[in-house]
Length: 429
Image (cartoon, rainbow, N blue to C red):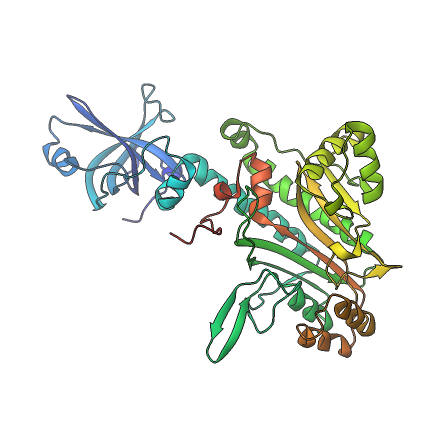
């Protein structure tokens, strides 16, 4: 008999179900088991009298053991689990679980030590499904806009982007590095004529940052596309991408997000507000008495981002806001410039930066000069070679999937939204 998912059970039809045991309650006359699979859960009810063989099979079985049961589903007004129960004619324990080392109410770091157990909770299962749906919605939008999904190398011969904060690895007889982003390879794809590309893949940052929003390995959703007229085109596309992802999530999980995460999926209106950095500084000063620290002038910091979101909601009624006109000293060399002003932006949502994007410099000589200015010429020689073959005007951005999920669901840390977290002090499991 083929397995039937719990959500697909039909009344009085003999079926085979399989899953892990969420709960066991052994009473004087009955044994009640809550069995769970990827589609949901159901109460398996075993009457002890007349079912001694089944009862014996359950002796000593603990929560999280894997069980299969053959029988029929019946409707019952007395059952809390959706008014349905499963009456088995046979059961088998496929895998016996030991007592869980993870106590209820354990702190986050302890939970991460046993992430495979922690992920079994309804909240974490839902979180990962929501994250998957968010990415699915964004992917679908890009496919509809004629983008091609690519897969770039994560082992590279030279340090990417800034030349710092990279993980060095031994690669046979020479050094290699884990890629900070697919930026150079996205642009190589543009040079090759693909015109519109994206990638969802891991990125690595050797930052010794122990904050709620940083990780040494995370999932990056990268987009690059050609024949733009300005970086405004990049912001326009990102608006559509984010709305597509959030709409997909809202359609599928709005009720569960309200009930389990106690938050709301808000679909933003277009266009997202846009403001120059210096104008933002003035607004934050006039409204909240905030002064940007000297070392952060030309850029943002965590406090600025929080106040920026407050300002965006108060003035524009929008949770999203684009910030433009950063200092060139705070932006990568491959951002195109206009009179030394980088043609790029950051996107802020719910108090946190979720994207850096820009129009890229596509002219070889200008790009070479920018790299020299940052002291990176030797490091990016292979990258500069791309642009000798002719490159159209283009731009792009990257979104951290884990950070986006954290903000969407109102969770306190990336540690909660990553399948397995990697940080300066965590390399296991």
